[in-house]
Image (tube, rainbow, N blue to C red; front, side, top):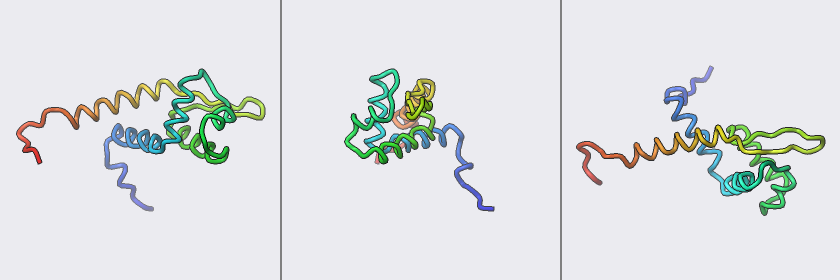
Amino acid sequence: MAYNKKNEFASGDARLATLAKALSHPARIAILKTLARKNACVCGEIVDAIPLAQSTVSQHLKELKEAGLIKGEVEGPRVCYCLDPDIAREFSEELRAFVEVLTGPAQGQKKC
């Protein structure tokens, strides 16, 4: 059985990396902005707002859903997507803490 070194990192760091990876494509950012402007969307409305093919948008929605940033519910022949505000807040807090670590005072460190 293969050993996954990812397990060696703190769970918060791994979660932050997962969420950041889900946001690593401009189409996913556009999808999240589209969902944020509306209470809920169906896939067709998202496809109309993003200049990509339906199949490509579906792949991006899948990535966002797997990361937990969005939820999707089947409504007849469509899937209705919406943001998960709890996960969005979690990401915001984790990212803020990470940036504070990067920009905080470095005791006794030389500048490069």
